[in-house]
Amino acid sequence: MHLSLFKIVKKFTLIIAALFSLFLYSCTRIDAGHEGIRVKQYGSDKGVQDVVLVTGRVWYNPFTEDVYQSPLYMQTADYEAFTVNAKDGSVFTVDPTISFRVQAGKSPHIFTKYRKDIPEITKTTLLNYVKDAFRIQMNKYTTDELISNRQQFENDVQHTLDSSFKADGFLLEQLTSGLGYPESIVRAINAKNEAVQQAMQVENELRVAEAQARKKIVEAEADAKANELRQRTLSPLLIQQQFIEKWDGKTPLYGNSPTFFKNVQ
Image (tube, rainbow, N blue to C red; front, side, top):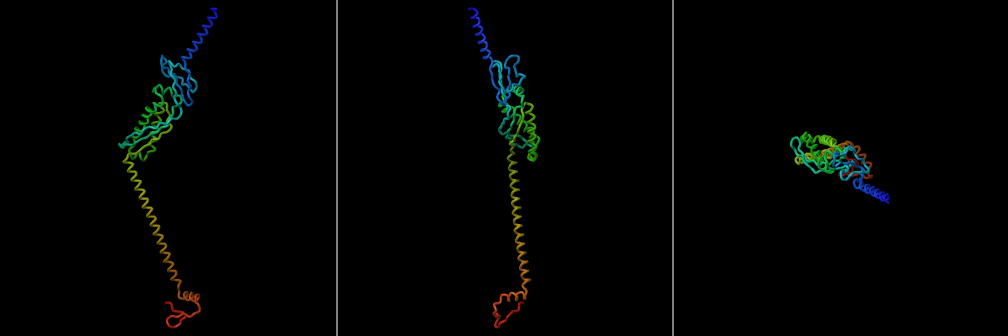
């Protein structure tokens, strides 16, 4: 009787212990395309563990630990426009868009440094990096230099931003500057383009006029040569020959008396 009671109590205790263990530990799954990290929130091990959790199931104690996920796929951030000054003081507008991703294995480093999730870091830290890159490089160019070397400027900005991202565990995939010139520069460029177009139009009109004038000259010269040739070929003998070919057999009258041929002066 006592032995049976002891076995029942033992089984009951094991069941309670198992339930308590399940209660203490939770399980989560790291989604595909993500990197998971397990964080100690209490005790001497508080902080990010050295082990980076890969995709799969992760067991953790919800009372003392948290599990975070960082996406490893490419993300895009379209920031609001802001202004930057060139070396000579001209104000340019930048409307940037970036595409980036987290470097594999860098999630612990990012979390340890910022204690924020990726969307929050994107809206704060990465935006500051973008602004700093444009301001640093813009300050090296005058307005004329920037207009003449825009591609080089954008390459410099991308190189600066890429270095900042890599230092924090991010990879810059693409940068679109959306660079806008000052209104005065835009007006000057438009005026120059309009002047060039008008000059091209006038030049084309002059070419057409010259071509038409040359055409008239050629036609006039051709008519003059044709008339000269006709005059040269209309000799008295030729005229009489044509008369004979067209004569109807009647003697023509010139004045009051019939004359077969009339002298041609």
